[in-house]
Amino acid sequence: MFPDEALSKLKLEEPFLPFVITLLGRAGVSISGVKEILYISSDEIKVGLRKNFLLVKGEGLEVAEIGGGDVLLKGKVSEVTFDG
Image (cartoon, rainbow, N blue to C red; front, side, top):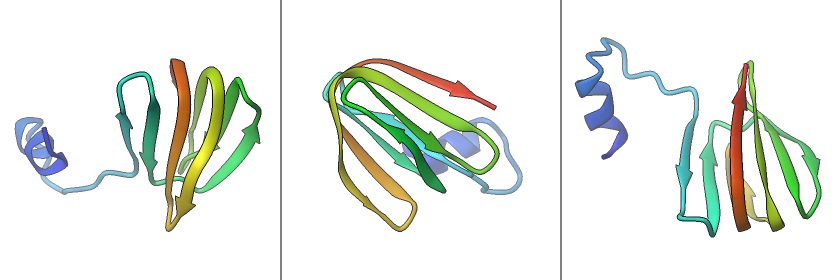
């Protein structure tokens, strides 16, 4: 499902998505709307969003690509936790 379809199904009047998280199986995570990377290790990566943060846990985690508010993480993902 694409973001526009999701907004339509949720009946949101304003198309406003402060962040989007896409799990790429267990091989990675694509995150848009990232303000900063708060912490990086091979088993945890914590990224800051607008007023929240996202914690990705796993094995062999690393930042594969970053730019323009988008981050691509790769490695064996075991857990994604959102707090905010």
